[in-house]
Length: 373
Image (tube, rainbow, N blue to C red; front, side, top):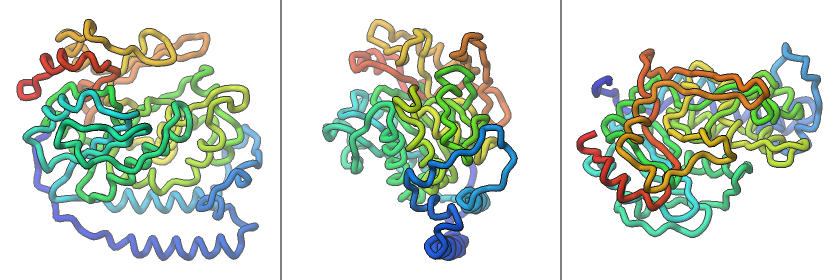
C-alpha cells in the first residue's frame, strides 16, 4: 500500500464566488423566461417538468439547459480538489435504530482519533450508544422505506452533514449489519490514497436491471446509460459534492424509479448512484463496492450470517476476494467478472462485510483482532 505523504495546506477555493455569481444569473434567467428554458426544472423540479416524451431511438441530441448547467458544476468541482492538512474518513451509518456492532467498531476506531468522523441516520427510534465514538453523532433523520426514494434521501442527508466538516475527504456508507474486515490503517490507506470512488456499477440486461428502466426518464437518462449496483458506496469528496449539487438526475429517479412503476418495480437506491456516476464521471469510479455481500442464495435479500456461520475461514475468504462475479437476471444468465483494481493494481476487493446478525458479535470480536490483522 502507498505510505503516508505530506499534504498541502487547506485553501479556500476562489471559484465558489464565480460559480455562485453564474448560478444567480442562471436562476434569474430561469425565473424571467421559464417557458423558454428547462433550467427552472433543474433547480425547482416538479413532476410536470418531466412528463414529455422523446423516442428511445434518439441518442444524439443537444443538451438541455439543466444538463449544461450541471456539466459546469461538475467541471468546476473536478478542477478544484478539496484538500486538508488532517484528512478524515466519514463513516455514515444508515440504521433502523441501535447499532449492534458498536463495540466492534469501537475496537476498530480506537487509537485513530482525529482520522475519522461518525454520522448516524436512524429511521426509527434514536439509538442508545455504548461507544464514545458514537455518542452525540446522531443527525436529524426521517423515516426510510426499503426500495423507495427515501433511502436515497437518507444517504444524501448523511453526506450533507458530513460535508460540513472540510477535513472529511472520503465518505463510506454502512448499514447496522456491516463490520470492518481489516484494521483501520489498511482501510485508511485504501480509501484515502485511491484515485476513484468505489461505486458498484454494471449493466444487467435482465428484468431486474435494464428491465426497470422507464422511457419517461428521457431525454436526460437514456436506456443505454441505465446501470445497476449495490447502494453501499465509498466516495471521494468531489463526488459527494456532485451528489449534493444534483437535482436534475435525482428528479428522474424520484418520479420514475419506484416500486409499482410502469407495472414493474424499480428501486432508486440500486440505480441512481450507478447511473449518475456512469454518466458524469465513468473513469472516476471503480465499478465495484468495497462492502462484501453474499447473493448466492438468489433471493430478494442477501444471505444473513448467524453465529454458526462465522468462522476464521469465512473472514479469510471474504478478505481474499479480488474480483467480482455477477450473473445477469435475463434468460441467458450471463456471468460477468470485474477485477478489483486499486490505482492500476489488482487488489482484494473488500474492506467491510454484511449482513451479520447481532448474535455474531462475540465470535466477530474473537476473530477480528484489529491490532493483528
